[in-house]
Image (tube, rainbow, N blue to C red):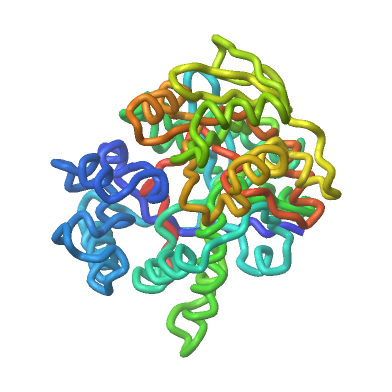
Length: 403
């Protein structure tokens, strides 16, 4: 059964919450982080992207970067801008984006649940990213950012979420991207902990590398008893699956081996092709292609392979187009392919192709939350970059310390 663990959060004083809160580390690069944090000394980007406070030439995996992150967290922790809860607590976190709300429970989940597959995965992690996040956790002795987790709707959990929202929030602010963030403290934690104990599975939605890093860091920190039992937990915002929204995760291809005309002929012969004015697929099994300033639509045949993961549009794309027509067999590592989050829209796809940065853009139909759970329940993994979740959680609002 799932473990939900209250924790003594390090958090900003309410007046500074909007200045501290920032986007997650993995949705921006170093250059973008520098720009977002410019003139904002309280931004939590100084903790999760500490290379922005060092010379531009410093490698982001240098020891100095991890040390700087730890120093920045300590400075924030000791400042009058931050407070730590006197006792362990749980929270309700609501995000409103474009008029749509998404509300879940903010607490800690257990490393043991991750290791034993009570918390199910759907994405393969990369060792280099695992090592990077693990070193940040170990050096800071803190989990600076939550992961996003989902679970099948549960009446008692929903009741507590709704009751908690009737109280005065700790934070309520609109971020620069227009998303409204509101956090309430749960009055009594026992009922919520007991309700999660009735759940047989939790599912990682976003944050696979942070989950794996939490597990690796727990093992590292256990050596020599460097920190106490809090190393065995890591922060998550847990949303009922009915609250979740998944956007498409689109693709670009840098070069077409035989040129655009030959590629379009090959697609036409293999799958069929129709010119369209609509760049967003209207239904599952359909993709849109952008080549030479024109959009085309085509349908993906059913898979000839065996598993539930093979039925996903992103898998069928590989089976019927990427592999036979473009010789792309491992999208995770192939240098001829890159991924573009659906939040950037199809205008970004057009910009990349029209500007000469890519030869082909592929607009996908979103993977559904039901498909994610089906693949996870089967113990399988999705192809890389199958899901893009919005809205994104803000970092820095509730930090889990391990000392």
